[in-house]
Image (spheres, helix red, strand yellow):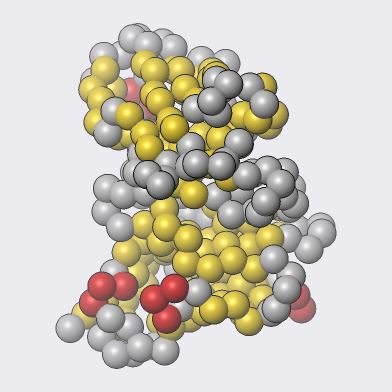
Length: 113
Length: 113
């Protein structure tokens, strides 16, 4: 079991551009959540996907959007990038029914210049 | 809304000394509580979790935490620090199985030889 995998591991984008980050959940998991972790801070919840729908959303603007596919993998899209979007983006997956524990990927380090 | 507060952004101990990392939660209902560890440029690894089964929870790498409802606390301890324990530690809370995690700001643990 590969666990939660995220791609790419590192990314550099220019202000105003758009970016797509990808996440494959751990085998058997159906729920995917995304978090933004700025340098020196705790992860901040962006949103959660289950059954291909956004179920919960944190305090993030509409520039942040996502998608979940039938195979439970997920994408995070950020439009009109700002310098302040530079952060480690973490994906976490879990089984909605089985337990309350989330497994995290290694993250994608996004740098906006 | 549920939240957690971690007291002390930095904690420094000597190798072999007691580790105590503090976490207080705010929740109107009994929560699920977690401690995660993060090594540099990596994702989050679960140390332990409290799900109301037992107030004293034992985790990996010799860590444990005690849920104290009267103090709304879930402090993380380890009797004897090891150099490999140096990392960032995050306390997190969810209200039930379908709500996503809210993290504290983190505590950076330094272990001196």
